[in-house]
Image (cartoon, rainbow, N blue to C red; front, side, top):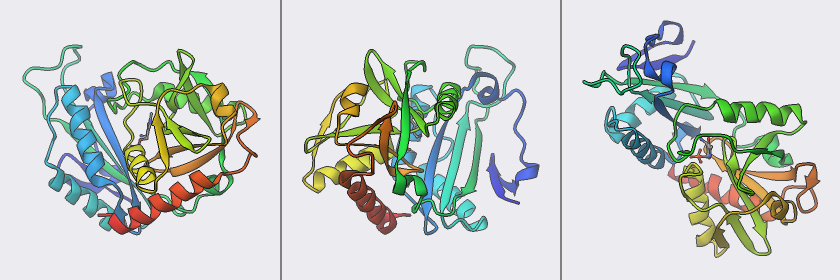
Length: 284
Ligand code: PMP
């Protein structure tokens, strides 16, 4: 049985408790982060901690503890649960209070939950080798996607629609342009240029995105941050997605049309390699 962290305590998962009045449960009034673990080390921890602080601030919530203390909790869970490859999930909510749309005043104690998930073969996944197939769906999420809230129902519905249509995932489209994947940022390669949507309130500012774009530029690859359409993506030489738990994963088919020759391309392959090498070297 896993050990999980709940509000200061390390407890067996079966003993972990959160109130039915928790605003995370009642209002999705909470934010989360997922940090991957490779070789027992946390990947991009600083980026995830920084984004957590930003998401909380956008909702007028403080950090429940400083980044060093958070790191210590992450490390203890990785250690106690013997995680070599996997992830640490963290969720912070505004806490429990009588149900009322207004934020409770005074603020209740925040709810802080962390747990691990073991994912053997995370770095060596079949999806990375084979590439994934995506379908396009309208982006019907709320308009502040830059805040990493736990209201993930639409992305979850999108993933189910993709599966129902025989694909692996969905890319969401708004005003004719791709925003992002249900749980990842989306990229295409046009000529010698890597194209991914510019940052804004329309997409989550991926921590993996920031790292991969930095590495691409360091490797003298061209990067353009702009919107693109499904049609442009279908005509691109390559497509791929990034996220903390999938790193860089090639996309080989979009709405039934093969991308390039329908197999993972060299840019995605190379970026995945560079990302994993640096992640392993710099993991905390
Ligand atoms: N966009 C969305 C909508 C996501 O849910 C995620 C994963 N949490 C990402 C992008 C990728 O972000 P990151 O690289 O920080 O995991």
